[in-house]
Length: 295
Image (cartoon, rainbow, N blue to C red; front, side):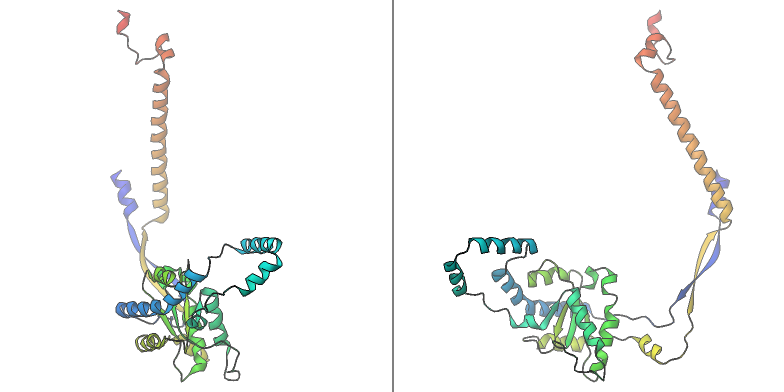
């Protein structure tokens, strides 16, 4: 057994090759932990009025079916007088003004960035609700597939603005989603986009512009140069068994021997259990039966 173990453990060096893109990787802007905490505090203080309004004046949605069912019931039971009374009933107070300067969620934020990225020098006046100043994402709380497109999208959306400040991509600290959900009174908050000119948002925008650098995409410029860039071949030094076939064959033989031992043990235990039954003992067929009574 010692010989087998030694032969299996013998390994030799091996080089593994893989193809990689010739362009530079896009990295998220670096933000210190203290700056992340400050940005999150400023953002939550800006969003809390929206959450207060939602918690006091907006009932949580129970789905489209519930709305249709309530509308049909109201139409059947409501009389003309009740209709007039409902028209004169007091309405909810207006929503906070800052709400119209936000995009909340994956779809709305991504859609607006795409619209900004589609603008060109020939069409700078594309119909839009405004220009984003910053996009806030609790990156560590989401799968990479949901956030991997953002650096390039933010970069292309900022190209037409030059020399105006670019959109800042802000990575919030871990656990920030829970605070955003509490501030907005929503079950889930993935992305938050903030437009320029938002009321009471000047301190937040100024701090983000100062502490967070713009997104840089080096390969975007490299691709625009029109020069051929060969594919990069990456190599990784690792090890493998000295004789892969021999090691596999030895491992298979060890597994087979282990299976035989296990099967033999199970068969022996089954035979002992069968011969130890009361019927076998009464017939005198069990070698392990107590024979002291024969005297």
